[in-house]
Image (cartoon, rainbow, N blue to C red; front, side, top):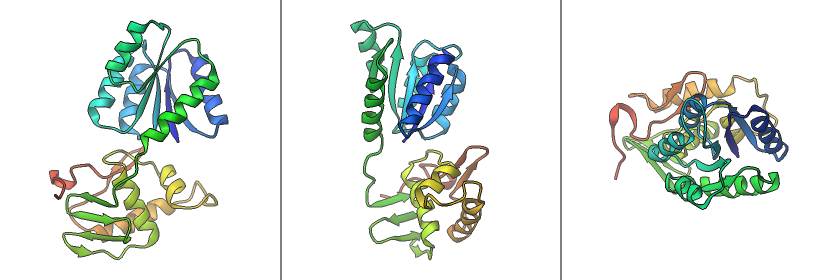
Length: 229
């Protein structure tokens, strides 16, 4: 599970991150709203632990923009105010859960895990973007009706990108989900496999590179093409 902690109190943010990492979660940290806003909307997180009163971009705006983007990310909002009115307002903004400060760390972990389970719904057996159709059951891929002969790793990469529904998937995530745990994290295998996959997919290009972040397949497909019915 991948988590983003957006909290301007550095000591608290770092403590939350350390604790979640001890629980086996992958955690990124942003110390202000501007950085948190960019990270939350560019990278696919399962859960964002979001302080409400942030410098730069307010937590309310980050939450609202995440909801408007259609991302599957779940939001756990933190605030120093624990009034019922504040909780209701936060939930109305689209937050999935609300935790007033101070809080018990065990409760935070339990809520993050519960939200993470909700952030990854079972994907449909057939994934379609533009003229590309990937059948997870039959393990087949076609583009414009033509069958593509993909290796298992190429198929796995394309499957993860289509399941992300327009979200960015990092090389590290692809290594984690497509390759096994023994793969060298500094290997170029993702880049090399991505190159051969792109060649097999042909034109127009389907996979975009987000420099310094990872890869994505836009939900509308290349050149603005819509989804197939």
